[in-house]
Length: 293
Ligand code: G1P
Image (cartoon, rainbow, N blue to C red):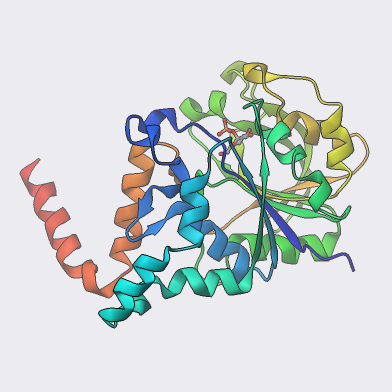
């Protein structure tokens, strides 16, 4: 059985919605409570038993690299205060995953970013995780659930969710064959990147987690710019669909689009409300706000 050994995370995005903070801090370093978003995503990969990660970075990713290699002076200070445990989570991740970096010199789209990782994937299926999409499931992480489905059906699997009409034109949208509906899996028959509402085949949107068979890389090499004049992963998947089946996985759990300020705020509230040290006070405070407005 082919297993999924490599994950790819594109982190080269400019984060314009978060300017000015993203003029000096990469968007994936914005925090959900005490952890940068990239930490949460990498934790998901580790918890999904993947050992190799390719981070597709822009020209400057020093802040991200520094995060995974805390400075000697910080280690020394924490040691002198007996507080090394405060950065243990970083070392725990480091021990469980091998991170390699490839550079996307020009921002030419998601498909182009994924293509940059081709030489590090050994012609095997890959997991692609978009760090704007944070997904909380109750037991196993979404990537693990999708790998389980991949092992069962041996076909590419893409996370999908129902979205309201106003989001359709900014996402990838699928058409599916309802006859082949099987539990949470939908056989995809068409994929369109950022369609207008009138051209949208459904309100089921591609949601930032993909398990994709290796044939995608040769297709990406020949994919022309599409929506937003960018090389789109969705267009390459659409070509892959001519040769192989692809399934949409309607995942259980909560989704946050942390590529927007409101989504990041919601994710922070959600994760804070799961922590016993914050829950009570946060909920009381929110309840009071509710009664004021
Ligand atoms: C990308 C994909 C899109 C998908 C979305 C999910 O869009 O191209 O198909 O629906 O991520 O977050 P982007 O957010 O890069 O515009």
